[in-house]
Length: 259
Ligand code: 2AM
Ligand code: CA
Ligand code: CA
Ligand code: CA
Image (cartoon, rainbow, N blue to C red; front, side, top):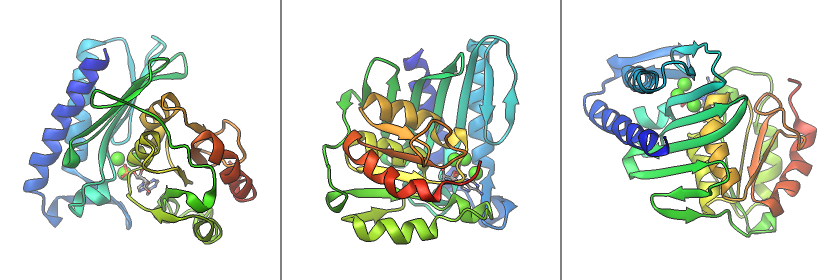
Protein backbone atom coordinates (compact mmCIF):
# COMPACT_ATOMS: atom_id res chain seq x y z
CA UNK A 1 0.00 0.00 0.00
CA UNK A 2 2.73 2.50 0.93
CA UNK A 3 4.58 2.02 -2.36
CA UNK A 4 1.31 2.56 -4.27
CA UNK A 5 0.78 5.87 -2.44
CA UNK A 6 4.40 6.93 -2.86
CA UNK A 7 4.09 6.32 -6.62
CA UNK A 8 0.84 8.32 -6.73
CA UNK A 9 2.49 11.23 -4.92
CA UNK A 10 5.36 11.19 -7.43
CA UNK A 11 2.88 11.22 -10.33
CA UNK A 12 0.94 14.06 -8.69
CA UNK A 13 4.26 15.92 -8.43
CA UNK A 14 4.67 15.73 -12.21
CA UNK A 15 1.17 17.21 -12.62
CA UNK A 16 2.24 20.12 -10.35
CA UNK A 17 5.54 20.79 -12.14
CA UNK A 18 4.01 20.54 -15.61
CA UNK A 19 0.95 22.58 -14.62
CA UNK A 20 3.08 25.31 -13.08
CA UNK A 21 4.84 25.94 -16.41
CA UNK A 22 1.64 27.25 -17.98
CA UNK A 23 0.13 28.84 -14.91
CA UNK A 24 -0.92 32.50 -15.29
CA UNK A 25 -2.79 34.89 -13.02
CA UNK A 26 -5.93 34.02 -15.01
CA UNK A 27 -5.85 30.50 -13.59
CA UNK A 28 -6.32 31.67 -10.00
CA UNK A 29 -9.59 31.43 -8.16
CA UNK A 30 -10.08 33.27 -4.88
CA UNK A 31 -11.87 31.38 -2.12
CA UNK A 32 -11.36 34.65 -0.21
CA UNK A 33 -9.01 37.64 -0.73
CA UNK A 34 -5.98 35.78 0.70
CA UNK A 35 -7.00 32.20 -0.04
CA UNK A 36 -6.18 31.09 -3.57
CA UNK A 37 -6.77 27.87 -5.46
CA UNK A 38 -5.62 26.85 -8.95
CA UNK A 39 -6.85 24.32 -11.49
CA UNK A 40 -3.79 22.26 -10.59
CA UNK A 41 -4.95 21.86 -6.96
CA UNK A 42 -8.22 20.43 -8.32
CA UNK A 43 -6.56 18.32 -10.99
CA UNK A 44 -4.19 16.73 -8.47
CA UNK A 45 -6.98 15.96 -6.00
CA UNK A 46 -9.18 14.46 -8.73
CA UNK A 47 -6.25 12.32 -9.90
CA UNK A 48 -5.45 11.04 -6.39
CA UNK A 49 -9.06 10.35 -5.39
CA UNK A 50 -9.78 8.48 -8.62
CA UNK A 51 -6.66 6.31 -8.31
CA UNK A 52 -7.25 5.54 -4.63
CA UNK A 53 -10.96 4.73 -5.04
CA UNK A 54 -10.23 2.57 -8.10
CA UNK A 55 -7.89 0.48 -5.96
CA UNK A 56 -9.94 0.69 -2.70
CA UNK A 57 -13.56 1.26 -3.85
CA UNK A 58 -15.08 0.93 -0.36
CA UNK A 59 -12.77 3.47 1.33
CA UNK A 60 -13.75 7.01 2.32
CA UNK A 61 -11.95 10.24 1.40
CA UNK A 62 -11.60 13.79 2.74
CA UNK A 63 -9.91 16.25 0.37
CA UNK A 64 -9.48 20.01 0.63
CA UNK A 65 -11.00 20.89 -2.73
CA UNK A 66 -13.76 18.31 -3.28
CA UNK A 67 -14.68 17.44 0.30
CA UNK A 68 -15.78 14.05 1.56
CA UNK A 69 -16.65 10.65 0.11
CA UNK A 70 -18.38 8.81 2.96
CA UNK A 71 -17.71 5.16 3.73
CA UNK A 72 -18.55 2.49 6.31
CA UNK A 73 -15.24 0.69 5.78
CA UNK A 74 -13.34 2.30 8.69
CA UNK A 75 -10.74 3.64 6.22
CA UNK A 76 -10.51 7.31 5.28
CA UNK A 77 -7.89 8.96 3.06
CA UNK A 78 -7.09 12.56 4.01
CA UNK A 79 -5.69 14.51 1.07
CA UNK A 80 -4.29 17.98 0.57
CA UNK A 81 -3.47 18.06 -3.16
CA UNK A 82 -1.21 21.11 -2.82
CA UNK A 83 -0.29 22.22 0.68
CA UNK A 84 1.23 25.65 0.21
CA UNK A 85 -0.71 26.89 -2.81
CA UNK A 86 0.65 30.42 -2.25
CA UNK A 87 4.25 29.14 -2.56
CA UNK A 88 3.22 27.10 -5.62
CA UNK A 89 1.66 30.13 -7.35
CA UNK A 90 4.65 32.32 -6.49
CA UNK A 91 7.07 29.66 -7.79
CA UNK A 92 8.70 29.04 -4.44
CA UNK A 93 9.68 25.40 -3.84
CA UNK A 94 7.93 24.99 -0.47
CA UNK A 95 4.72 23.26 -1.42
CA UNK A 96 3.77 19.60 -1.10
CA UNK A 97 1.29 16.87 -1.84
CA UNK A 98 -0.02 15.41 1.40
CA UNK A 99 -1.77 12.02 1.66
CA UNK A 100 -2.71 10.26 4.90
CA UNK A 101 -4.71 7.16 5.77
CA UNK A 102 -6.88 6.89 8.85
CA UNK A 103 -8.07 3.49 10.10
CA UNK A 104 -10.91 3.46 12.66
CA UNK A 105 -10.19 7.13 13.39
CA UNK A 106 -6.42 6.64 13.93
CA UNK A 107 -3.77 7.91 11.51
CA UNK A 108 -1.70 4.98 10.23
CA UNK A 109 0.12 6.18 7.10
CA UNK A 110 1.46 9.46 5.74
CA UNK A 111 3.18 10.48 2.50
CA UNK A 112 4.35 14.06 1.80
CA UNK A 113 6.07 14.89 -1.48
CA UNK A 114 7.67 18.24 -2.39
CA UNK A 115 8.05 18.02 -6.19
CA UNK A 116 10.14 21.18 -6.71
CA UNK A 117 12.83 19.71 -4.43
CA UNK A 118 12.12 16.04 -5.17
CA UNK A 119 11.79 15.29 -1.44
CA UNK A 120 9.61 12.29 -0.59
CA UNK A 121 8.76 11.78 3.09
CA UNK A 122 6.70 8.86 4.35
CA UNK A 123 5.85 6.81 7.41
CA UNK A 124 3.67 3.93 8.49
CA UNK A 125 2.63 3.63 12.11
CA UNK A 126 5.16 1.49 13.99
CA UNK A 127 7.63 1.31 11.09
CA UNK A 128 9.61 4.58 11.38
CA UNK A 129 9.81 7.66 9.17
CA UNK A 130 11.85 8.13 6.00
CA UNK A 131 13.03 10.61 3.40
CA UNK A 132 13.66 8.58 0.27
CA UNK A 133 15.28 5.38 1.61
CA UNK A 134 16.85 7.04 4.63
CA UNK A 135 15.36 6.78 8.14
CA UNK A 136 14.87 10.14 9.87
CA UNK A 137 14.77 11.31 13.51
CA UNK A 138 13.86 14.58 15.21
CA UNK A 139 16.65 16.84 16.50
CA UNK A 140 18.10 16.61 20.01
CA UNK A 141 17.95 20.36 20.59
CA UNK A 142 16.84 21.06 24.18
CA UNK A 143 16.94 24.83 24.61
CA UNK A 144 14.65 27.32 22.87
CA UNK A 145 17.71 29.55 22.41
CA UNK A 146 19.27 26.84 20.18
CA UNK A 147 16.05 26.08 18.31
CA UNK A 148 14.91 27.02 14.81
CA UNK A 149 11.16 26.67 14.43
CA UNK A 150 8.53 27.32 11.78
CA UNK A 151 5.10 28.85 12.04
CA UNK A 152 2.39 30.10 9.69
CA UNK A 153 -0.48 32.53 9.41
CA UNK A 154 -3.45 30.55 8.17
CA UNK A 155 -5.32 32.56 10.83
CA UNK A 156 -4.87 35.80 8.87
CA UNK A 157 -6.18 34.31 5.66
CA UNK A 158 -9.10 32.76 7.42
CA UNK A 159 -9.88 36.19 8.93
CA UNK A 160 -10.04 34.56 12.37
CA UNK A 161 -10.02 36.48 15.60
CA UNK A 162 -7.40 34.07 16.96
CA UNK A 163 -4.25 35.67 15.71
CA UNK A 164 -0.73 34.25 15.66
CA UNK A 165 0.98 37.65 15.76
CA UNK A 166 1.06 38.08 19.58
CA UNK A 167 2.34 34.50 19.88
CA UNK A 168 4.99 35.19 17.24
CA UNK A 169 6.10 38.30 19.19
CA UNK A 170 6.49 36.29 22.36
CA UNK A 171 8.21 33.18 20.97
CA UNK A 172 10.54 34.48 18.25
CA UNK A 173 12.89 36.45 20.58
CA UNK A 174 13.39 33.25 22.61
CA UNK A 175 14.49 31.19 19.57
CA UNK A 176 17.68 31.07 17.52
CA UNK A 177 15.53 31.90 14.48
CA UNK A 178 12.21 31.35 12.74
CA UNK A 179 11.23 30.13 9.25
CA UNK A 180 7.95 30.49 7.37
CA UNK A 181 7.70 28.09 4.43
CA UNK A 182 3.93 28.12 3.85
CA UNK A 183 3.27 24.37 3.87
CA UNK A 184 2.29 22.93 7.26
CA UNK A 185 2.92 19.41 5.89
CA UNK A 186 6.51 20.33 5.03
CA UNK A 187 7.02 22.15 8.36
CA UNK A 188 6.17 18.85 10.06
CA UNK A 189 8.47 16.84 7.75
CA UNK A 190 11.39 19.24 8.34
CA UNK A 191 10.81 18.85 12.08
CA UNK A 192 10.81 15.05 11.59
CA UNK A 193 14.06 15.41 9.66
CA UNK A 194 15.65 17.40 12.49
CA UNK A 195 16.24 20.44 10.24
CA UNK A 196 13.60 22.33 12.23
CA UNK A 197 13.17 21.83 15.98
CA UNK A 198 9.47 22.64 16.14
CA UNK A 199 6.38 24.17 14.53
CA UNK A 200 3.17 25.82 15.69
CA UNK A 201 0.18 27.31 13.90
CA UNK A 202 -3.52 27.96 14.48
CA UNK A 203 -6.60 27.67 12.24
CA UNK A 204 -5.20 24.72 10.35
CA UNK A 205 -7.39 21.91 9.01
CA UNK A 206 -6.92 18.16 9.37
CA UNK A 207 -5.80 17.80 5.74
CA UNK A 208 -2.92 20.25 6.35
CA UNK A 209 -1.41 18.12 9.11
CA UNK A 210 -2.61 14.49 8.86
CA UNK A 211 0.26 13.00 6.81
CA UNK A 212 2.94 15.17 8.45
CA UNK A 213 1.71 14.12 11.89
CA UNK A 214 2.26 10.40 11.13
CA UNK A 215 5.73 11.21 9.79
CA UNK A 216 6.72 13.40 12.74
CA UNK A 217 5.46 10.95 15.39
CA UNK A 218 7.32 8.07 13.72
CA UNK A 219 10.48 10.23 13.77
CA UNK A 220 10.13 10.59 17.57
CA UNK A 221 8.33 13.94 17.67
CA UNK A 222 5.35 15.05 19.74
CA UNK A 223 2.17 16.63 18.37
CA UNK A 224 -0.54 18.27 20.54
CA UNK A 225 -2.91 21.22 20.73
CA UNK A 226 -1.73 24.43 22.44
CA UNK A 227 -2.52 23.04 25.93
CA UNK A 228 -0.66 19.75 25.42
CA UNK A 229 -3.92 17.85 24.75
CA UNK A 230 -5.28 16.02 21.73
CA UNK A 231 -7.84 18.52 20.40
CA UNK A 232 -5.79 19.61 17.41
CA UNK A 233 -5.99 21.39 15.07
CA UNK A 234 -9.13 23.04 16.61
CA UNK A 235 -7.31 24.20 19.76
CA UNK A 236 -4.08 25.09 17.95
CA UNK A 237 -1.32 22.83 16.71
CA UNK A 238 2.13 22.42 18.27
CA UNK A 239 4.84 20.00 17.16
CA UNK A 240 8.44 19.55 18.34
CA UNK A 241 10.98 17.07 19.55
CA UNK A 242 10.23 15.62 23.03
CA UNK A 243 12.58 17.91 24.92
CA UNK A 244 11.35 21.15 23.39
CA UNK A 245 7.67 20.37 23.19
CA UNK A 246 6.96 21.13 26.88
CA UNK A 247 8.80 24.44 26.61
CA UNK A 248 6.74 25.39 23.56
CA UNK A 249 3.46 24.39 25.22
CA UNK A 250 4.26 26.43 28.34
CA UNK A 251 4.12 29.54 26.12
CA UNK A 252 1.30 28.47 23.79
CA UNK A 253 -1.15 27.30 26.43
CA UNK A 254 -2.25 30.83 27.37
CA UNK A 255 -2.99 31.55 23.70
CA UNK A 256 -5.18 28.46 23.25
CA UNK A 257 -8.09 29.29 20.92
CA UNK A 258 -11.53 28.43 22.25
CA UNK A 259 -12.50 25.57 19.97
P1 2AM B 1 -3.03 25.42 1.64
O1 2AM B 1 -1.91 26.02 0.93
O2 2AM B 1 -3.33 24.01 1.30
O3 2AM B 1 -4.29 26.26 1.64
C1 2AM B 1 0.28 27.74 5.83
O4 2AM B 1 0.10 28.80 6.69
C2 2AM B 1 -0.82 26.70 5.97
O5 2AM B 1 -2.11 27.32 6.03
C3 2AM B 1 -0.84 25.77 4.80
O6 2AM B 1 -1.01 24.47 5.31
C4 2AM B 1 -2.02 26.27 3.97
O7 2AM B 1 -2.62 25.25 3.21
C5 2AM B 1 -2.97 26.75 5.06
N1 2AM B 1 -3.91 27.78 4.62
C6 2AM B 1 -3.77 28.60 3.59
N2 2AM B 1 -4.83 29.44 3.47
C7 2AM B 1 -5.65 29.13 4.48
C8 2AM B 1 -6.93 29.63 4.90
N3 2AM B 1 -7.57 30.62 4.28
N4 2AM B 1 -7.51 29.07 5.97
C9 2AM B 1 -6.90 28.06 6.63
N5 2AM B 1 -5.69 27.56 6.26
C10 2AM B 1 -5.08 28.08 5.20
CA1 CA C 1 -6.14 26.07 0.32
CA1 CA D 1 -3.18 22.90 3.25
CA1 CA E 1 -4.26 22.81 -0.32
